[in-house]
Image (cartoon, rainbow, N blue to C red; front, side, top):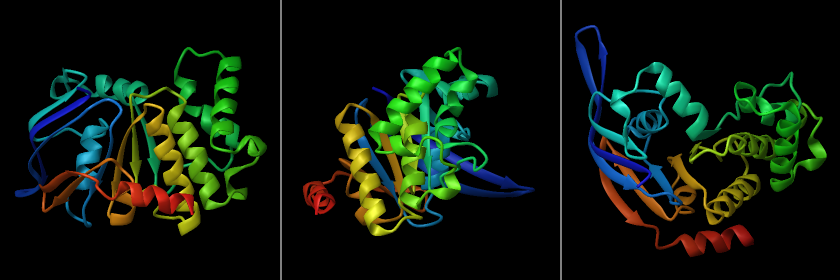
Length: 237
C-alpha cells in the first residue's frame, strides 16, 4: 500500500471562525495506480492534494505513506518527503523563464548528491521521452503551452518520485495539447508510475483508471472508470 487515508479532516481557522474543508475522507491508493480526484471549486480536492503531497497537515484522521504515519513528521521531515517521494505538475507550469529547458528539468537535482554530469544526462533522457530533445537550450517563454507542460512533466520525473501529482495539468492548454499531456501521463502510468490527477473536468478525470469524486469535503463516489477505453481512443484520434 502506497497511500492510506482514514477519516481525514482539515479545518481552516480564521480568528474564532472554524471552516471545515475535509470532513472525514477514507481511501487507499496502491503503487502503480492512476487516480483522479475530481470536484468543483471549493470541494476540498486541492486541500486533499496538498495534504497527500506533504504541503499541508491534516487536522484529524490518519494519513500513512508507505506505512509511515505522516502526522508524526515535523516540517523538516515533510520537506524531505516532498523532495524525494513526490513530483509535481502544475496548471501554471511553474517554470523559470531565466533558465533553459534543460536547467529547469535539472533543478530538483540541485538539492541532491547527483553529479553535474548525471544531472545533465538524466534531464536530457527525460526531455527526449517527452519529445523535447530539440528544445534543450530554449527558455520557457519561447515554448508553447503544451511544450511547457511537457517540460514540467520531465522535471516531475527527474527525482524518480514514488508518486506524481498533476494539479489541473490541462487547465491552460488547448484540446490538442491537453490530449498530448494526458497521453504522456497514461504512458508513464503504463510504465509503472503512480499518478494522482486533480481536476474539475470530467473528461480529463476519465483518463485515469479510478475516479474519486469530492463534494463539500466528502467523497461521494469512488469508482473504476468504465469509460477509460473510450477516453484513450479519443487521444489516438
